[in-house]
Image 1 (spheres, rainbow, N blue to C red):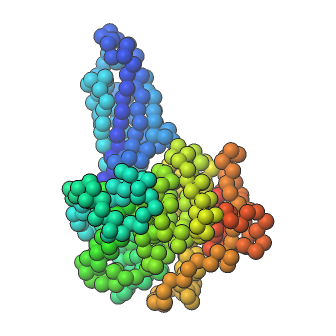
Image 2 (cartoon, rainbow, N blue to C red):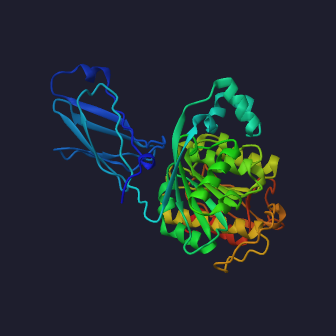
Image 3 (tube, one colour):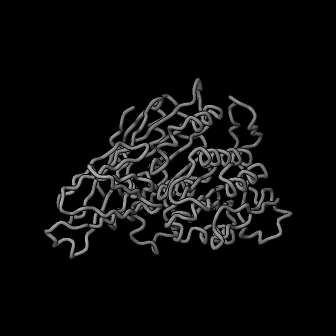
Amino acid sequence: MKTLPLCCLGLVLFAFLTPDACQRVVADDVTLHGVVRDTSDNILPGVQIAVVGTTLKTSTDEDGRFVLAVDGSKPIELILSKSGYQDAQLSLKDLGQRIETKLVAITDDTGLITYSRSISMSHSIGELRRDVEKYASREMDDELYREVVERYGEKPSEEAVFRIYLPKGVAKVNGLFLISEHGVGGPMMEHPMVREFADRHRLALVGILGNAVQRGVYPASTLDGVLVDIGDHVNHPEFGSVPVFTFGHSNGTGFSASYAAMRPDRVLGWVSFHSGGSWHLVFPGVEQVPGLVLHGNKDSYFDNGQADAVRMLRRERKAPIALLVDGESGHWPRDREATFSLVLRFCESCLRVRLPGFDSATKGVAWRSDPLQPADIPSGCLGQAYDREAGGMQKLGIATYADYQGDRETANWLADETFAKSWQSYGASLEP
């Protein structure tokens, strides 16, 4: 077990005092109000916070927040702990100051190859957020990149780290699974279930972390070039041309959706897990690729227009996309294995509809090299919309396109009956 410098997640703790409390000299209770995040700025629930030498303790809620009353007359030391992270100890000296600390994730590079590259921050799609109205409908190509650099100047480079898993005993991979390690993507790279999926389908996993890339990188030629270089690094030159899946958590959606939008001829399917907003769901061109948008009904970020964005993509762009809501979840998965299993089932459904002659029961067989087939909306299934006002887990109706009784223009699109049943089951019980 070891820790990669750029693969470390951190926590940010804020302590606030009322003005009166800051002025007290005598012994008195002080109420600490805090919020805990990781270094990708994701709220982090379930962090245990204990006051050393006392029985006082609390934990962060679904929004990463906590409240804790302490004796302000004594030195205060906090212990922060969460499964999958290294414990951290924090000494509070000036309670009137905002306090920041980091809790480092425990990462495991067993079976992974690492590769690093310095990439200009001008390649981050965050640059396009400077002027949403001007750039929202623009194709994210080299011309747009040059225009943005001319307007704002070239930004400094930062290191990006790529972790690669190669399927066992495979001379030539069928494709790549590109995973933004923003948030839950890191554990996904390390999970045995995901690696078994990669082995079975001859897929290489490529984990991506670094501020210039993990939330989205443009133009596509930038990432294309990195994949070519990684392929040379691991002696798999086909990295530069084989089909890919993309996955992103929170603002990692900017990565998964943008590459799908820029390379619809190459991306088999894209997944957004609990996105931080809606702007990165609607890139021009994303409607050409099957997409799955998952969200937690208790996630405070799920009020940023994601459901409306999916409905718009279905109605106006005829996008093959579905929204799947976990009625009891916040920003992170409640059950990682269930979530990863559902994502992999979605990927297999994309293989069935986009690769001619694909047989999911056949192991170790190279995919045919035909161009990817477009998703045929009437050949799939449709699913009902989640009722946010009712909340909770919901078993939503599914039907073939021909038999669906609701509004076909806005209903969730599901590739086939097999995946439709998994989508329905996950929404009802978290069991895909």
